[in-house]
Structures are given as structure tokens and as C-alpha cells.
Length: 410
Image (tube, rainbow, N blue to C red):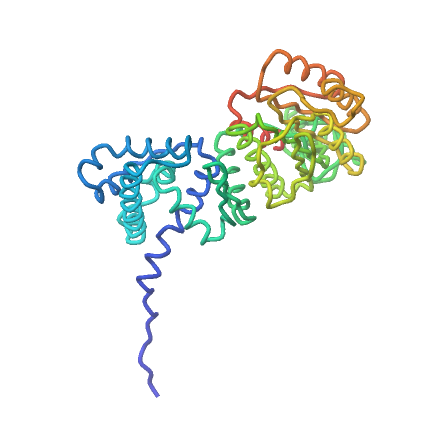
């Protein structure tokens, strides 16, 4: 019995358009909301979509009206009836423009590369947040003192970690080496660039460099492999590292500083997992208190309270005492301590005392400064000296910290 040939069912056109819609730019929109200091550009101007739905006089001065409305709400939390009416007109125009933009994305009339995600978020903030909440990236939005606090989900953290790491790796020197690979000699399955005499008790056959071993005999005009002329590549020494990232979340860390610190933590955790090195990361947020941040919670850190550097170092020391491997402590702060957990010590003295106690654990202290006031710099230099094994770094732009942290790991 003959059967007629079958053909594959054509793909649903609606599904095709949906896959090319807002879902494709959701992760970039998420990053632009989390880090408003990251600015990108695009050829397509979304404000032209909004102006299409406004009266000519409003469209002409759209940028001015938008700025006025934002300032009124930020400063006073309300506006007069005159401004309310005009603000409502802009809101309605934005809603229509947002639906139009989504439709253009679904149909393929505009691509992701043509859009500036920063501009999209600037003009459609509420609409974007609502969409991200439906997609599972935003848990809730809290209004506080005329500003909106976004609470992110663990899904958002996973997505942003990948995004931030990719941005960091774009500018990373591939020749750099990190903390988990040292200059020590030892045994491992990895060969280094260093050539040494072959030792059957130290090297495996995989370490033998045949070409280099034959050079001596070749220079004599012979091709003979003699054991006493064999050379090998020195195995690299690798060690497990326990990273402890101490993030200052006091009041002064608001804005770029806390965003930069969070990005660094996201980057390092993702890099460790991608490498499968066995290293681990512990993140401690501190102000006048200190608590460990669980995975999925770091995006929701808020800056508030005083600064107790001594308490942070004490917490790091406690973690490293109970861990195996070499400790690497990143102390990230923007100013001198203003609080001390020890009532008998000043904030300064407490920080110095705890820095000195870092000698009791196998750790390298990396002090990251976001501020460079004279007194703060003096304190950090003294902490580095007392700890015995420390480095001091200053970052004028906190958003560059993620590149540094990943380079220290590699």
C-alpha cells in the first residue's frame, strides 16, 4: 500500500514573531535597570514613537516636559493640576508607543542592535519593569520616598552574572594570571612554560618535551633520545582559594559604588563556576553589622548605616579559620570606619587591630578603595602593613572593579 509523502508542519508565524520580540532584549533591559550608569547607543530613537502620540505643542517640548515631571515627583512627590493633565497625556502616549515598539520587535521591523537599552529604560521605565516582573526577573517593586526600589529574583541574578562576566572578559588581558595559580613549584596535571631537567620521581611522561629533549643530540648531528639529556615542562602548582568579599554597604556607598561592588561579586562567582577550579566565594555585606549574602540575594543589597571595617575583617578571619586552602580577602570600602563592634576600641583602632590579626590565617588581603581622602588612605596603608600580606588599590570608577577581580582569579 503506497503512502503519500509527508512534509514537516510549517512553523507557526505567531511563534516566530514572539521569539524575536521583547524576550530577546529582556536581559539587556534588566542590566540597564540594575546599572543605570552603563550607557549604550542605538540608531533608532524611541522618543519619536512617543511624540507621534502627542499633540504638536507637547511633542515639540517633550524632553523638557519629561524632565520637569521627574523633578517634581522626585522633589515634592506631587504636582499641580496643570502639570497632572500634561503628565497624563505623556503617560498615555508612552503606553501606546511601548505597545508599538513591542509590535515592531515581534515583526522584525527593528532589531536589538538598533536600540539603545538605556534610552528604552529612560523612557519606558514602568513598562519595562512590569514586563520583567511577568518574565520572573523582578519579584516586586516598592515605592519609598518618591523612588522605586526593585527587588530582583534569583533568576535575574543568574542572568546578570553571565552578562557582567562577558563584559569584563571583553577587556581582560588573556596573559594575566590569577590567585589560584602561583609561582610555587609542585605537582599537577598542568605543564608550565618552564623547561627543567627530567626527573622520573617528579615528572610524568606527559611532561616530557620531546622536541626540546632532542635538541642536544641534534646539535651533535645525531637523532638519539638519551635519558640524561631529557627535559620536561615544569608542572604548575595550583591551590584551592577561598575568596571572601567584604562589601561595604554603608550610606556612603550608594550609587555607582555599590553597583560596582555587586558586579564584582557576580563576576567572580560566575568565573569560579565556569572554571570548575574548586575555589569558593563567600560574600559578606557589612555596615555597623555584618552578614553573609546567600546566592540569589546580592542584587537586593541596599546602602545604609555606619561602617565597621574591624567587624568585617573579623568575620573574614572566622571564615578562613574554618576553611581549607589559601584565603583571598577583598575589602571593598569608600571611607574610614565610623563604628566599632568593640566598645573599648575606636573605629580606627578596631580596624587596625583586626588587620593585624589577619596574620593568624593564610590569607592575602586586597584593600579596594573607592575613596582617597588623606585619612582613609593612611588607614588603608597601615592596615596593609599590619596584615603582613596585602595590596592596596584605588578605583576612581567603581564599575571597573569587576575587571580587576576577574583578572586576579584567572
